[in-house]
Amino acid sequence: MSEASGEARVASKVNKTRPKLLQSVAEMEDQFGGRDNRKFRYAVMAAAAVHGGAELDLLEEVAYWATDDFWSYAGLAAVAWARAVADQRGIAFADLCARLRARASTAKHAGR
Image (cartoon, rainbow, N blue to C red; front, side, top):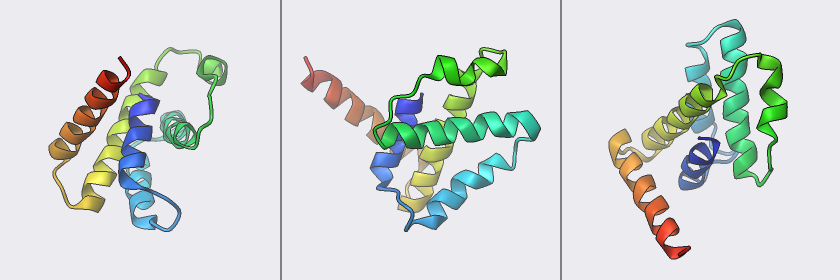
């Protein structure tokens, strides 16, 4: 899931000069409270780190959560980035998802 978030970031060419995109992702944080907010924020930042080339040891990083729910927050982070990118580009969320799926399929077949 963190890789999917990273792909959405690549598609957006997001950087610090595009604050509206980053603000859009941050607005989704407002839907969570307390510990859930921290988990979501970690997943969003993990996606940014993967996009930047970092290799994360997620098992060690999220072990303190004492749950196995990172995947759900990673999925929400991927959706948040993809929605923000779709909004930025002025396209439907479904269209962006189709483009990302086609891009992933092309990359998968090229690797064979």
